[in-house]
Image (cartoon, rainbow, N blue to C red; front, top):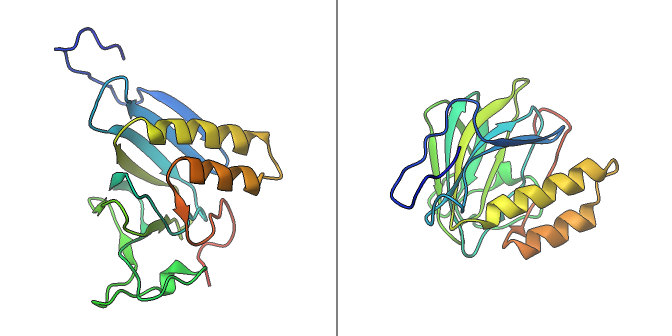
Length: 182
């Protein structure tokens, strides 16, 4: 995966890209800020029980495309931002979380609360794009360093990391646990 010149494109074959793996998540860097001024692109494997927690970014726009599996998703401003159980949230227009299946696209503009969780017993594979680069690249690299240093996971370090990379956490991040929030 090498960029030849500013006028050449980039072809990343299946399985290509640098992959970071922890028990909590797997992220493969497909397109980075080195290759694109517009967005960073990743393939993400979300394990059973993982819940990123409701959060928002004031500067970043994100796009998710479900490739395999089913994942619960939310992308709206709720009537009330309760500090837990984002699946109970409702918007002023009646929106609530949805079950995303292969082929589902989720677009998240800056400032929009969003969340995803894998409530199933199978891993979920998603394409994920974040703009502008390279904030999410650096965030993933530093997050994996924190996760690899545990257990126990240093929650204060994760909280500081999220603040540094424009992530306002609204409900808790859960790296493992029951198949669905209750």
